[in-house]
Length: 124
Image (cartoon, rainbow, N blue to C red; front, side):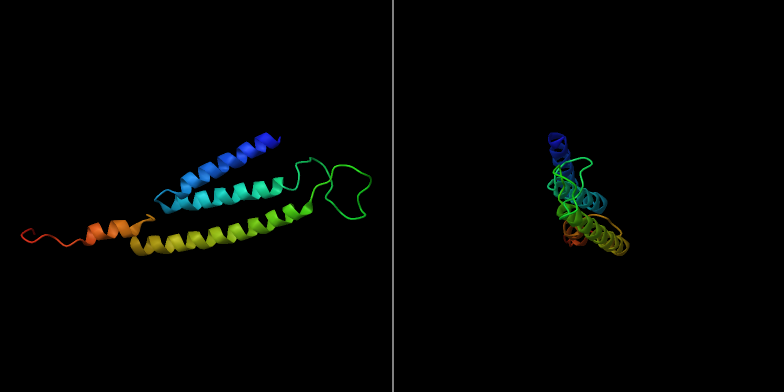
């Protein structure tokens, strides 16, 4: 089970890096979201991959047995909320940039000099 989870985290990370390096806004947002999912699964896996085990509660666990650590679960819940808020802010910023410039390209600086380049003399 650990190998399957590690492979999934690796694929999520690889696809996320590929999408973040795109020149359009939507793939970048999708890549950032996928990267946050990969980190969340990694944090969740650090608590132990035990199915049906109770969380580690002091004095409330009946007998010795497999237990999971609740701290990574709390961290993942917090990370989910933060990544959702961050994604909403980035979507709103990209929508504002799209309405202002009419393009969803990330590298607007490279596109603008070509459009504003002075015409050589003698040409209309």
